[in-house]
Image (cartoon, rainbow, N blue to C red; front, side):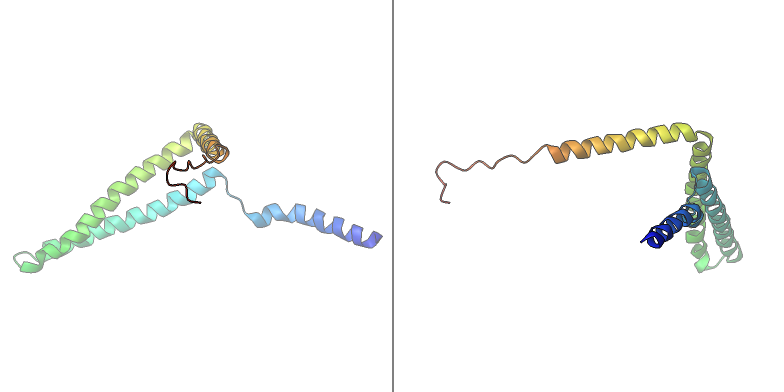
Length: 135
């Protein structure tokens, strides 16, 4: 009996020491940093897509398949615009982390309050008709 309790305490102590390392939890700055890297790679891909479209368009001067470069250029420009907006948003989030966390906490509390009101409101009893009450 005593050895089982000692073994359980040892397992809990080991788990307490090792679990934070195995969880690998990210801070907000680390998560946004990785997202920043992904956006940088996608920006590179969008610039390459636009460049390929421009090369296709320029090399087929005077031929009918010249317009085949336009979808590449359109994708590159659209992706470049969207990713630059996301990059600006990430930069703002990194600069104003405490404000963002306060706003997120307010939104979560507001959603929890709405959910609580919705769940505690209760269902209205169905009114039965005067003349059609056959049950």
